[in-house]
Length: 171
Image (cartoon, rainbow, N blue to C red; front, side, top):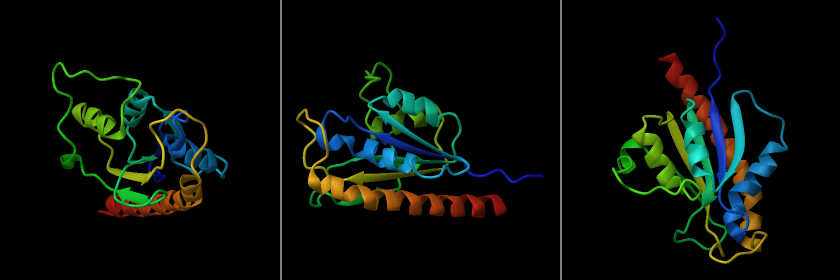
């Protein structure tokens, strides 16, 4: 019997027309230039949060979301969050409007949880932006400088997720 490799989705999200909000797309672009790894799907979902939610529901073992996030650090700071399903607000309330073209990662995770499509592990790798409110192309120097570190962090996270999946399958 052949052992199934963990299925991992790496998803870049954000709007490349809003300066640093294109961080996820740039990290994904670089990752896609590498040799493909078995069981790993790498996609830029842009602002198509509903597309991302549907893709997650295909049954991945793990999800790595790459986006920008306002925190307390200086621009270019990388954050790693590992939300548990129980930490995400329960579902989408009846009558609550969802803009399928502007679903942020929190809303995507709420939607996925509501339809029972939660992957085994979720990791969010985010970067502190300089500018995401104004239209414009290109990342700020601070965020552009964080891209190579984010790529390395995604690769390290893939190894951790595979190791975690192997330990779980051994039980």
